[in-house]
Length: 248
Image (cartoon, rainbow, N blue to C red; front, side, top):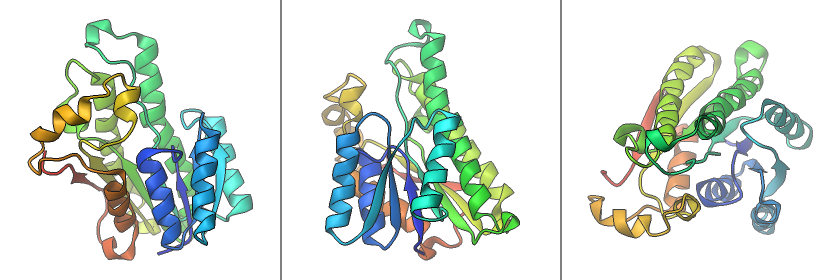
């Protein structure tokens, strides 16, 4: 399928790779960003230079007002969304539970779980045949932390991603008869900037040997998996999360 693809948190890493690959496959793409306009515009420029069509749209995907504005902008500039990749997320501060603040917990759950709920709500309003839409696909980017637990590092992050996988299951069942598929993609150790931003710049080098395949994954590999889940090749996959972890 092609149409209009919204990728949240698309100025870097997995989100940027998804936006670029989606455009190469024929989607008109909204590149969402929060605090990196130059990087988002660079992604848009790369897409446009390759003959694609993309816009950059600012917005904190943990804020309902920003999310509503984003989808209204997409309606006006690209058309109604037909594919959504909920990618925006944060790890929060690293530490044990007895070192965490409520504010940090709230920030993580707001962006990683409540935000995707609201983004998916806005997408369903536009995709669902119940609302006059033509159907679509929602892909939620989760994390192997949902299975592994995040002990002594980021329990709040792991729990938020576990919640996102439960949401994927439930929403997929809820809208299955309305032309919408909802699927999760669970990355493992992926070589992106998120590790340095969480204060562990050597994390990939330390964890890569623990992956049965002996290496970290790449953002491009995750993008290929996400776009496959959106495609008609995955037309019977719904209400489940696919692991992309190298076996870890």
